[in-house]
Length: 330
Image (cartoon, rainbow, N blue to C red; front, side):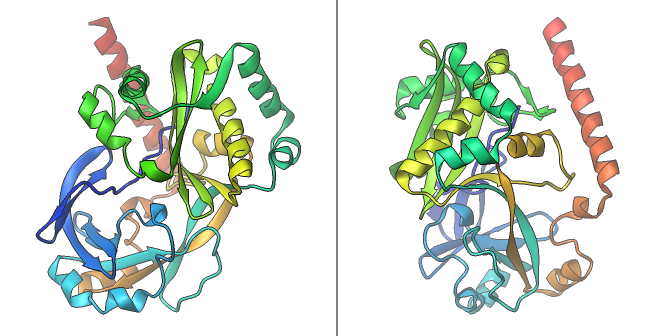
């Protein structure tokens, strides 16, 4: 089951050169700086990296012009930043700047039409899965962000403490916490729910960023996996994108540090393609320059061979599953 997508950094409050953001499902306060209407936040442990808050969720031009941000380099260094990073969007994948860049892997469906996706971009088995969902009574429709829908989302969150072999960030959170986590960008969002009768068994939150529809979160109940609610949700999302004139439906990253996995395979089956977009890194300190030279700017795990990462990932999943079974038995 694909894990939920959440904005890595979302705003709550800002004061005195700091801001509260959500990181891995928890709200933390980090240094921040306002530059020309954009909020730059500084995150990281040993290597502090500055970036535009919610970069992928911001409308308009985020990457241009970076010199406006670099003019505040000393202020960023005063906040502890060793490096500044920014990216171009999936609709603008050709590098336009002279700074050092790597490539971000984006999973996206280029939206021509629902018919194009249905007949040309997905395999026969996927079409059968969507039909299976309908045959078993799954109905996908819009739902409003209300107290009742928040409780229904909580019911999905609280089904299991382990997802994708890892502790699930939102398991057993309070009503207020779940409401806060899901309340960003409501003025340009849609919630699609997969319903079995009156029960919400899966949902997508879609945020519209210019003409791109970005999936902020997608999740369903494991108990109803056989009914293929995830496939039905994505099919409805593509249909909605055509109706709204969106150019792409984006589902986070296509590839991850550990290489292709079951989530990547799920995306591929549902017609998502890989789009590579440049991500720039501009060192601000000696530590930043050294990290870039040693290729540590994207984290040490980027240097670990894929087979080792895969083995460690499987071991972690095994340990977490055993822990869950032990708790259930006690």
